Amino acid sequence: MDRIPILKLGGTLIVTIQVDMHDRLALALEEDLTAMIVRTGARGVLIEISALEIVDSFIGRMLVSIAAVSRVLDAETVVAGMRPAVAITLVELGLELTGIRTALNVERGMAMVQARLVEEGDGHGSSRDGHEE
Amino acid sequence: MTVTKSETLPIRSGDDVVRVRQQVRALAIDIGLGLVDQTKIITAASELARNTLDYGGGGEVRAEIVQAGTRKGLRLTFEDQGPGIADIEQAMTDHYTSGKGLGLGLGGAKRLSNEFHIESTSGVGTRVTIARWK
Image (cartoon, rainbow over the protein chains, first blue to last red):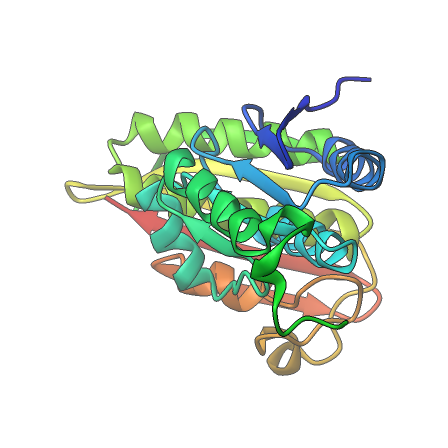
């Protein structure tokens, strides 16, 4: 069965969706990402969708679900590179990408994820004031 | 209004939903729809094909290129022999879902189309027709 590859770059997992998503592929991606967050301790997930010609409620639900599970596992999801026509259609469809941060392109998306890592001092040092200790 | 091209595709699996999208894209390009309109009709088709599969237990779609005067359009008719929809008005409401979906399929498909028509009979099946004009 084909799967969507997941790359790890520092504390971030990067996924580029290049194919027309079908059910099994979507489910496999969700499972793989979840397992990889746990295995690597990643704090950010960047999903690049500039190749996607449509985002329907099925794919939207997959993205929302990935973001929700990631959040529970302490990783933040950013979806980057949505095509303008897809964005227009998504709004008209009425789909809200609840809990998902979006970025215009992969570069800005990466900056968003990195900002979170820096903000939290990557788990050590003085920048953690106000946290739960 | 005349039909200048017509083809029927089965909707029996998730892969069929992908094929429906690809075919609708080809026809949308064929009649010269712009990128945004293409995206809208493909997305609407995807929602309806998934409804046919998930709620209708599978069925088929008839994709037609229609012409009215000088205007060309793409008309899609989704049909299933499933349980039917008891309350269409309720089913059209955003975020209403009888299953695991987000409940945006019917209302969303309507908003993404120029024409929308639904007929459903309990125990007989459902037919949804949408059209997008150039």
